[in-house]
Structures are given as C-alpha cells and as structure tokens.
Amino acid sequence: MKPETLNFFDKVYEVAKQIPFGRVTSYGAIATYLGAARSARMVGYAMNGSSGKDVPAHRVVNRKGLLTGKQHFDGTNLMQQLLESEGIKVIDNQIQDFEEVFWNPTEEL
Image (cartoon, rainbow, N blue to C red; front, top):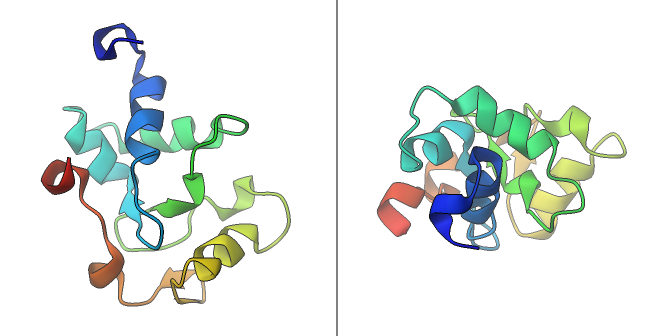
C-alpha cells in the first residue's frame, strides 16, 4: 500500500513495526515523526487497536518511559514481561535507563 493511501492508524503501525528489538519509543515521538506532534493520544488509540496487526505495541510508552498502556494487554504484567524478554529493565511500571533504550523515529528513519 502506498504511504499516501494509509490512514493515520496505519501510518502509526508502519512506524511501530520498525522499532528495533530491545528498544522503545513514545506515543509523542511517533506523532511528531508523522507530522502530527499534538496527536500523541491518537497514537495511543492506534496502539490500543493494534491487536492482531503484528505491531509491537509493547515497545510504545509515554514520554517519561511509563507503561501507561499496560492495561490493554492480556494478563496483569504482559507488557512488562514482553519488554523484559527483550532485555529492557522495568521497575514499578517505569523503564530503567529510558534514554539509552529510547528509539526516536525522527532520527532513525
């Protein structure tokens, strides 16, 4: 599908699919990359609707590295478990060394 024919959610999914294993990004970073800097919440809605689309939604967190979307994953700690399986350390829903594992699509893509 050509990028110009994708809706906003599809564009979000295309960016999220490029987040490398063991890295995370934020809702706002994806929104900014897509030219919609004030649409972080819409990116969150897209992540909520990404089930079954092969999107690594667990790699998208808030701007402070908090697992704010964890309630949308099955099980109580699935988001954290997925991140930890990629080597990301999480304590009290907070990614540790956030700056080191942060992936900025504006700089990387």
